[in-house]
Length: 124
Image (tube, rainbow, N blue to C red; front, top):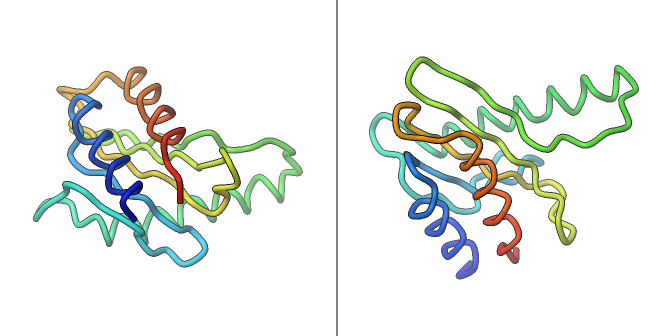
């Protein structure tokens, strides 16, 4: 679990505007690790809810016969970005990183770039 904690701390400190971050197993919907969040963002609830988003997108791609991989899913709210990055490196299938950002402080392109870097450092 140490590496998960290190990766989540890296995301919290290196990605400008981060509100919270979680590593999630989308076969179970369970958060394997969380950092940040708070009373306005329950990361356990977000993990379970975003698992449904990932499953729905995977199912839709199968129904459409798309033979591609999901890189990330972006949900844009009035004041926040929610970024879901499916992990593909080194056999991490079934996991995703969930990142909630304050829209007024975040640079979305840089956040996506930094989240890829966090993925690369993860060893689960």
